[in-house]
Image 1 (spheres, rainbow over the protein chains, first blue to last red):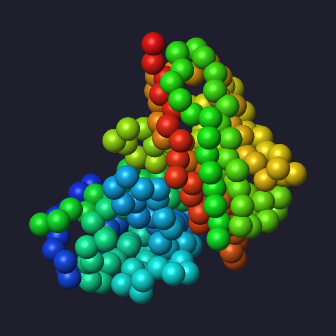
Image 2 (image 1 turned 90 degrees about the vertical axis):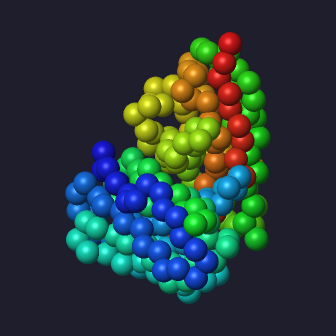
Image 3 (image 1 turned 180 degrees about the vertical axis):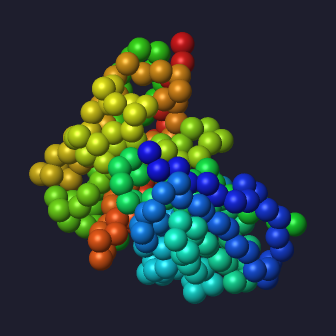
Amino acid sequence: DIQLTQSPSSLSASVGDRVTITCRASQIINVFLNWYRQKPGKAPELLIYAAINLQSGVPSRFSGSRSVTEFTLTISSLQPEDFATYYCQQSFISPRTFGQGTKVEIK
Amino acid sequence: EVQLLESGGGLVQPGGSLRLSCTASGFTFSTSAMSWVRQAPGGGLEWVSGGPTSYSDSVKGRFTFSRDNSRSTLYLQMDSLRAEDSALYYCVKEAYTGGSFYFDSWGQGILVTVSS
């Protein structure tokens, strides 16, 4: 199975901060990496698909990038609703694995 | 608007069975890929099944994925349940664009608790 390792596991930030979360895959997965945000007590929601594509309706402060097996989710200016847990997920091969999550907390 | 409504969860003893259902609306269910994803209390996300021949190792041989396109309903038959199967189970619609799959719509989840 493909392993996805997210870093950091948690971080503290303030409203307006720029935040970067990294997801490293255990093997080449091309661009088949997606990002989700899960607010407390809610279902996850899709932010970015295929590494760099912003899902319809998602604010432009979210962006994704890729360098070989390392993927990055960037939030350019953190908003109150962004304090949540973020997950990466690969769709290159079954089983569709997720990273362990990154919790973004209020500083 | 896509809606996914799970039902059938609850408390079951170890070794018991449950069948989860997910009723879908707002999209063409018959042509859409679907999956089940679960989340243990306080834990991360785990993909469970994405088709009748596609299962995670942790549930293979115990869980059965099925769908009734005429009823726009997805099912997950869960047998030989274990304590570690306790989780919130999400019904998820999978989209496909340019060769890439992704989970674009999620239900609110249904809780399964396996305990004596």
